[in-house]
Length: 161
Image (cartoon, rainbow, N blue to C red; front, side):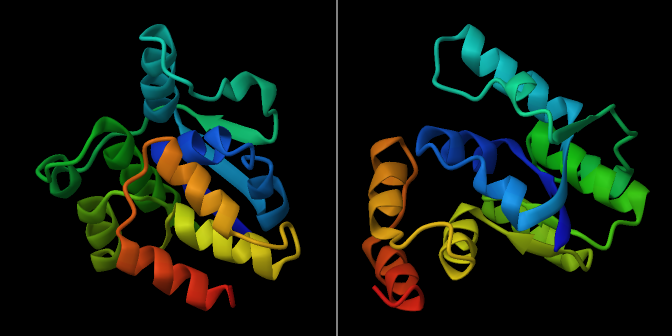
C-alpha cells in the first residue's frame, strides 16, 4: 500500500458520497496539511457540507511547512500549495491527491504521482470496496463536482461499467 498527501477536494467529495473511509483501505497513511484543515473549517463555518477531520483519526494532520518560491509563484490555492510543499519537504515516495488541473500539472512536473477523486473511485472498485462506481459518479456530480460526459464515460469504461 501507499502513503498519500491529500488536498481539500478529494476529502470533500469523498465525504459527500459517504466514501471517505475508502482512503483508509487504499493507503497506509494519509497526510493532510494544516492549510487543508483551515479550508475545510472555513467551508463548515459558511454552512457547506464538509468533513470534520477530527472524526477520522487515521488522517494525520501535518503542521505548516514553508512554501518554496517555485510553488508560491504558481496560481494555486493554499491547500494545493501546502500539499506540494509538504511533498517536496518530506521527500515522500507516496502520491498526491489533487483534483485541480494546474496543481496536478505542477505536481507531475515535480515528479510526483497524482490521483484525483475519480482515480480513487477506480481504485476502490479494483480493491473490491464497491461493486459499481456509476452511483458514486452521479453522487459526485450531484454534490457539485463537474465531470464532462466524455470523462464520465471514459471512467465508466475503465471500470468495466
